[in-house]
Image 1 (cartoon, rainbow, N blue to C red):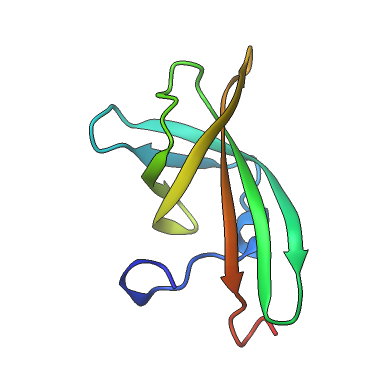
Image 2: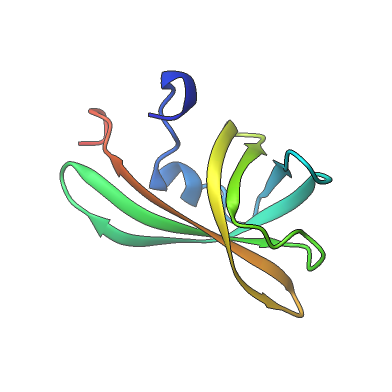
Amino acid sequence: MGQNGIALPTKRDFAQQVAKSFRVSPAEASAFDLALVEVNEIADDESQETFSLLFQAPADAPAVQMTYEVENADLGKMHIFLVPVKKNHNGLYFEAIFNQLKRSEQV
């Protein structure tokens, strides 16, 4: 469960948002946009799913590992722990790893 008992989006939910924008609102910095670049399955069985998300941010985004408030037009607001993993001419990349139990309707 996510904050306030609300279930976090599933791997399928995130997969539908590839190439779409997510707004990040750091507590002590200016807001910036991320683009969801990849959703990668790590493990999946009848009771849980483990996957990673790779986001691309502007090159000047703060390269700080922390829990960010992230908002997407379709998925709403959530808190995600993002880790900067690489930087190149295209921007700064953040990764998030999810390991969560499947909801009963997914099983």
